[in-house]
Amino acid sequence: MVKPSTFQISFEINNRLKPFDDPSVRRALNLAVDKKALVSTLLRGMVSEPAGPVPTGAQWPLTLKGYDYNVDEAKRLLAAAGVKPGTPLEIRTSQGRYAKDKAMAEAVSGYLKAVGFAPSIKVMEWGTYSKEIETRRRRRRSIFWAAACRRWTGG
Image (cartoon, rainbow, N blue to C red; front, side, top):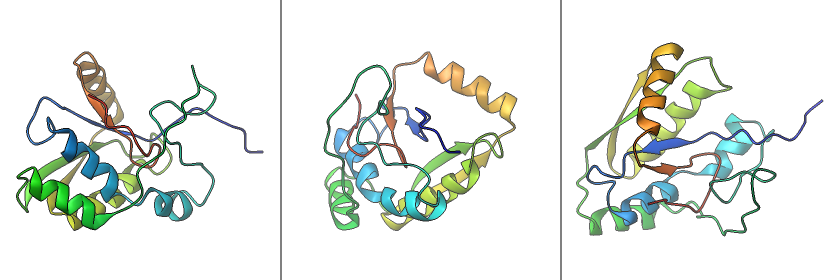
């Protein structure tokens, strides 16, 4: 039996670091990832694609229009922001802690590579990864919601 959940898959970004301090770069990240494809293929249609940072049923309802997948617009925004092709971007993930965690990181990495980033994936043991997440959450950050949300760039 499948029951509704408020669990989301997300990627956090330090919006104090260049180029992620630019809202147009964070918008480009949202445009660069085909969330519908991730939901239908990698996650086999077992989840829905929320349109905001808070899932339906948690805290308060949000009615946001999400970003559609648009590689050309993502590339345009990145170029306008001065992001050079080959800009490094590290994705950190656990493996086996959450459903499809490493596979999701690999899929998102491919989308980000297609718009010009040079992504790398750092797979971490859960204890190390969770400690790092907790340390980072103490800092102010924005969130890039890959398979979960569609139109929130934070800030």
